[in-house]
Every structure is written in structure tokens, then in C-alpha cells.
Amino acid sequence: MNDIRRTILWVIFGFSMVLLWDKWQIHNGNKATFFPAPEVQTAAAPATPGASSPAAGGGANSVPSATTASAPAAAAGVQQVPGGVAPAPRHERVTVDTDVLRLTFDSDGGSLIQGDLLKYPEMADKSKPFVLLDESGNRVYVAQTGLIGGNFPNHKTPMTVVPGPRSLADGQNELSVRFESPDLGGVKLVKTWTVQRGAYVIAVKHEVVNTGTAPVSPQLYLQLVRDGNKPPGESSFYSTFTGPAVYTEAKKYHKVEFKDIESGKAEIDRSADNGYVAMVQHYFATAWLLADGIQRDLFVRKVDTNLYAVGMITSVGEIAPGQSKTIDARLFAGPEIETLLEKLTPGLELLKDYGWVTILAKPLYWLLEQLHKVLNNWGWSIVALVLLLKIAFYWLNAKAYASMAKMKAINPRIMEMRERLKDKPQQMQQEMMRIYREEKVNPMGGCFPIMIQIPVFMALYWVLLSSVEMRNAPWIGWIHDLSSPDPYFILPLLMTASSLLQTALNPAPPDPMQAKMMWFMPLIFSVMFFFFPAGLVLYWLTNNLLSIAQQWIINKRMGVPPQFNLPKFR
Image (cartoon, rainbow, N blue to C red; front, side):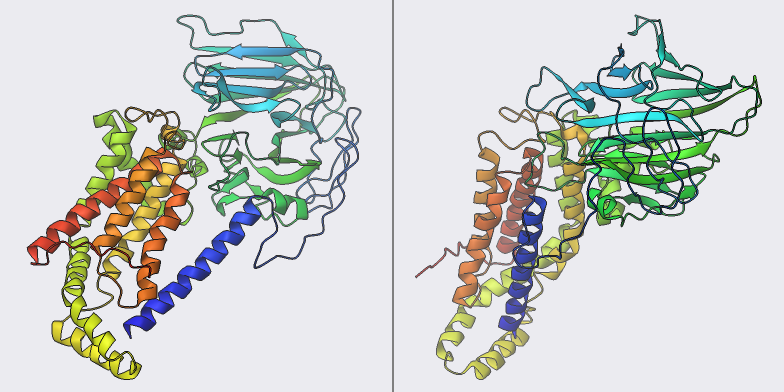
């Protein structure tokens, strides 16, 4: 019976490895090896930027524009947001510096075309700040706003930059950059970006002035446009999400894959009076925020070849001649720090996505943060957190190791019986079950308590993988960045050694093939840890060492002297 259970577990493990390999192949841009999916037929990309392209829920009429061709809107009945990014040459670029941000705006449309995070250096060159938003030869990631509903100013309209300070002076807490459009269609748009000291949120004020002789009813769009590539320098060994995300109270947080936009299969709430739209990547995000209660239409769409947009459209309302109306929005552009995001708007903390383990990951992150406040070192905070988890699960682990110790004590009898009855498999199984009953041993008793803990440690894995606090955070000595692999592979080697030591302390499976596999498993899995961030390896190593110590103590208490079951590969 025990052999059957082990065989079933090995079949599940093997099938899981096959699925993981297929996902790994797909993640790296290759075709699946075992379960290839049918190829999705996609429409040909437009030949020129800004050309009309269909989006989910089409059926809207395109809006004529002097500056750009239009594309159908994401929701039926919603007027179209102009597509593409502004063409060269640029008229003027304005750079603004705060203590945490360096922002570059383009006078064409008053768009934000570059955002440097001054407190977060690049991984490859730590003398340079991390570039989140960018419009260069290799990347497109910009924030744009404008008006639709007529031949009104949009994100391609050349605007005048109002002179003013471009960096925060000592004692100054905020500064503004003001763009004024010409009169288009009887409408003038005045766009003011305001940054504050220490803040990753930028206030964007849109003042719409009716300069004509008839009432107008424009709509304001806010969108984030970026290419579909992974962020430069991101490791391909572990998969993190890059792409649009939409949040509403009705549907909650919803990620949208670029391929779903491409194929027209993206499913989001199309209309709401709350929520936000965002572009997400590992550690960092941007998001457009409107005040709750303002009705908005949400969209995701393909703009051009490998260029995608997520955004929202809201009505400015009817403006009489000579009158004006103002709509305020906010743009978040910064690190995915939970405590920071929670203060900005409901649900924004979900940009730091833990997936199905969120309910466990959030309290673990909170505890890790509290430990860091005391220890002031993220590496030691990880060690302390694993120690606390081990204490919390002490009795579960004790039962598991006690069961293993009993199995170890009767293992010589099992081995002798298997050898004696090797030609009588049915009798061997009966005799094995009799020994288990007599000794009151449950063969699965060592597995169940450990399996209960797996979701907790999976949640901690995602906490460490997702937390920007680990980025460039030192531990000791040679570990200068817990988010990067150990440069000298010391932690992975120690991790491998601890895994092998754990295997040696466990009772050897009666079946020789299973015994060999139990030794191959830690070696196979340890290969991955050579590419994992040092913080994750530190977490697993600490967990292994504490498990070994507890197992050793329990074995001694039960009168089962620690014994190393070395592999036999003959």
C-alpha cells in the first residue's frame, strides 16, 4: 500500500514537472513541447502609427482628427482615443526634478515621455537611476491625455510651455509644469502637471475652455501606452507579470495579457464610477487615478505593432461659450510598496500581485516589515521571519518528524521483510501493513503536517519575489542585493548541501528506485536556486537548517540516534 502511494506521488510530481517545462518553454518564446496550443490568428498590424485598429467591444465611430488617424474605442458608443505616439521631430522637451523623480514632458500634447526613479538605481549600472517611463529607440512607455468628441486638442497637439522652475528648491514642496494648447474646434486645453517632494503621485489638472460661439461636450481620455516587451534586464528564470491591469469595485483586480488584447479576448469592466487603470511590471507600476463617483469608460486596445494601451474616458460635460470646466486626475509612477499604494486609492495595493496566496502573503509581508523596523536589515528580517514561522508550526513539524523517526526505527524490519518476501508481492504488502499496525505507524504521517505548511511558505516565496524592498538591499558580506542571484553561488551551494543533509536524515524508502530518486530530487531542484534571487535562497536555506535542527532534536528525544542514510546507486 505504501509503495502504491509513493508511486502515485511520483506520477503527480512527474506530470507537474512536464507542465512546468511546457510553461517554461512558452515563457521563453518557444513552442510547448508536450501540449502545444493551437496558434491564434491575429489581424495584421496597421502599416502606419495611429492607423485604425479594432479593439474589444468595437462598433464605435471613429473620430476625425487633423493630427492623427483614429482607432475604434474599446467600448461601444465611446468616442475614439487617438492612437500611436507623437512623431519626431519634437518641438520641446521639459525636464522636472524632485527628490525622488526626474520627469520629461513633450510639448506635443504635454505628454509624460520619461520617468526616472532617483531612489532606485538600475540593476546593471547602479550609478544611473531606474527608468520606468521611456520613449526611445528601443522602448515605448508613456502617459498621455487629451480630448475627443471633435477636432479638439489631444496628445499630439503642439502646445506652448509656460516658463517656470524646473527643480524643487530647498524648502519648496511642489512645482508645476503648465502646457497650453491652441484653439482647436472652439476648445482650448490647459494641462498642468504638479509634482511634490517625496511623492510618486503626480497631479494632472485639465482645464477645458470653450473659446467658440456654441456649446461643446468634449470627453477627456487618460491612457498609458507601452510596448509588449519584457522590461530590460529582467530575469527570464522566474515569471512575473508585465502588462495592463484594471480595477473596479465590481470586478476587482484584473490583469490583461498583451496576447489577449492582440486576439480581442481581453475581458474587463467597460464602465464604472470607481477604480483605476494601470501598467504593471516587476517591482514598479504606473496608474491613472480619478476620484470615485466620476463615471468613466475603461478600455484596453492595440495601438500599433507591439504597442498597447490601457486607459479611461470621462465626460467633461457641456461647456457654454466663454466658460470652462476642470477635471483633476492623478498619475502614480513608482515602486510597488504596499503601504504607499494603500494610501492612494482603494485596491491600488493589488498592483503588487501575490496571486492565489494573497490572503496569506499580505500578513506575512506586514510581519516582515515589522521585523525590518526592528532589525533594519532585510536579510536578517527574512531569517527572523522564517524562525517565527518555524516556531508557529513547531508542533506540526514535531508530529511529522516523530512519524519519520518511527519509520526510521522500524526500517530495518521492513527491509528484512521485503528481502524475504520479494517474490511474494501480495504477502509483502500484507506483512508491511501488519508491521505498521503493530508499531502504530502511519506511512503518510510525516507528509500531511508538512503539506499543510506548503501554502504558507509559497506565500512567503511570493512576498520575497514581489517586494521591491529586496531590490539592491544588502545582507552581509558578499550579498549586496537580495533581489539578484548570489554572485559567488555560496548560498545555493549551502542550500544544496542542506537539502542533501535533510535527505540523509530521513528514513530511506524501501524501494531502491525511490531511494535513488529521493537523492536526485534535491540535486535537480537545487539547480534552480543558482538563478534565484539571494533573498529567496536565504529563505529556503534558513528553513532547511531549522528543519534539520528540529528533526535532529526530535530523533534524539525518541531514542532514535541520528543516522545518515547515504545513497546506494549500484
